[in-house]
Amino acid sequence: MIRVTIYNEFVHERTEEKVREVYPDGIHMALKSFLEDGDVVVDTVTLDTVNELTEEKLKDTDVLVWWGHMAHNKVPDEVAEHVKEAVQRGMGAIFLHSGHESKPFKKLMGTPCNLTWREDGDYERVWTVNPAHPIAQGIGRFIYLEHEETYGEPFGIPEPDETVFIGGYEGGEVFRSGCTFTRGYGKIFYFQPGHETNGSFSNPYVRRIIQNAVHWCYNDKNRRITLGAPSIEVTLEQARLEGNTGEYLKMWD
Image (cartoon, rainbow, N blue to C red; front, side, top):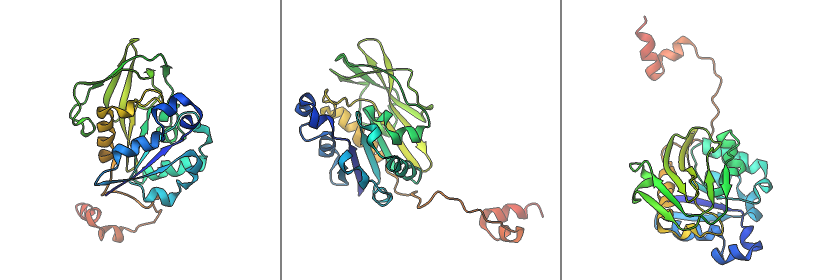
């Protein structure tokens, strides 16, 4: 069973009629509607309940999905630090659309994560450039999105481990739309589609990608309680008694 927690700030939907028409129950509930199935259970958190993202809550979360936009700065620094440390210990994380500006994503990347953007209702083709990647399974050469907010390079992130998708727009911009990273023991996927007025989370291929990403990010073998490495003085005799190190030292006798 994969335990997913979805964070959506849930501000646009309550303050803007145009967004409420697209996501009447909130983006978090739209995501939950297609992520929750027989082997995935989903909990949701909004800005109003963001303090529920404690260390204990994140220890019980296998994959965190994050959507935010206009209230990034209202997320407490302590929560962002909890998320960063949970990823480093092995929790998976998926950051969607403007989640690139979120505090946890910036902490994990260590860079500004800025980009160029336009909101003109352009179409986007999301090209699959790494079709062998597990996140791209079931996806063809490209996904066509009739309307999506335009993102453009340069994108202020570190070099990704892998670039799975590249977006191309009506105006000529290109963008690394789907990128993977590893931090500590945790896997991260950034995926660009998902502007609050465009309804991209209703697209079956966008949904398939996010579903694939949940399974790819899931770490069922290598979670850590702590990342701390003890500082212990070890004698040569102790080293000789400990597994491969001891066997290696015997070669020099």
